[in-house]
Amino acid sequence: MAADLHIHTTISDGTDTPEQIVKQALALGLDAIAITDHDIMDGAIIASRVATGKNITVLSGVEISCYYNTDEVHILGYFDQVVSSELTKTLAEMRNFRWQRAKLIVEKLKHVGINIKWQRIREIAGDGSVGRPHIADALVEKKIVPNRETAFKKYIGTGCPAYVPRKKISPIEAIDLITQSKGVAVLAHPGTINSQFFSQIGQWIKHGLHGIEVWHPHHSVMQSQYFLNQAKALDLIPTGGSDYHGLKHASCNSLGAVTAPMESVERIIELL
Ligand code: AMP
Ligand code: FE
Ligand code: FE
Ligand code: ZN
Image (cartoon, rainbow, N blue to C red):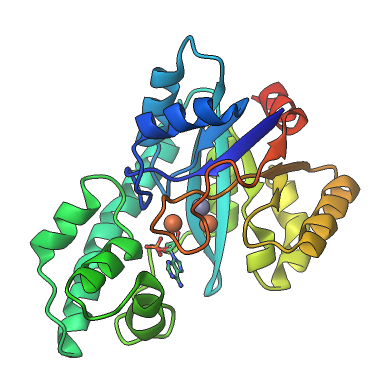
C-alpha cells in the first residue's frame, strides 16, 4: 500500500503529462498519488479528473517555491478542492514573475555571449509554470552544455552568471496561504535545506505546518530515519514521494521509486 506524493508534470518542469502520470501510476499499482507542480495546480486538477472512477486516490497538490533568506525552501500543499482565491492569485503572480525571470535569464545569457531564442523557451515550457530546466534544455539543444546539470553549474544555478531568483515568498506566507485554503502544508525535502530548518520549524508549525517529507530521492537512509523521528517527536505527518520529473531529470526520474505509507495519506485526508 504505497503513495507517491511528490510528482511533477509538463504543466511545470516534468516531461510527462498528468494523463500519462495517472496511467503509469495505475500500471505500477500505486494506491495514491499527488501531482505537486511548481507554483501551479492545473496538472493536479487534470489528474484528479482523469482518475475519477479509477482504483487510485489522487490528491491535488502544489509545490510552492519559497526562500528563507536566500535559501531555497519548498513547501508542499495538499488539497481536497482549492477554494481560496488568495492562493490562486499568489500562484498566478509567482508564475508571471517566473516568465519575467526567464526573460531576464535569457538577457543575462546574452551578456555572456549565449543567444537563446525567447520563442524557443516559450515552446519548450508551454503555457504552465516556466522554470530553469526549460532554459537548461534550450542550452543543451544548442549544444552549449552537454546536459542540464552543466547548465545549472555553469550558467543558471545560484551564484552563476545568468542566475536570477524567483519571486520572494517566505515559507510562512506559503503555509498561511495553504492553511487558509483548507489544505495541508508539508515541508518538502528538509534534507536539502540547511540547519536553519531546526530553528524555524517551531514557527512554521505555529503557522499550520502539518507534515514533513521524510522519504525523498535526495535523502539518505539516515536522513529519512532522522526526519521520521522528528515527525514523531513533533507530531507531524511523515510524507514522501519520488519528486518525479520524467526521464530527463538526473535524480528524480523514477515514478513510485520513493513512496509514503497509505497511513500518511489517511492522516492528510482526515485533515482536509
Ligand atoms: P526553478 O524552479 O526555475 O528555480 O528551477 C528549479 C528546478 O530545476 C528544480 O525543481 C529541479 O527540477 C531542477 N534543478 C535544480 N537544480 C538542478 C541541477 N543542478 N541540475 C538539473 N536540474 C536541476
Ligand atoms: Fe523541478
Ligand atoms: Fe522541491
Ligand atoms: Zn519537487
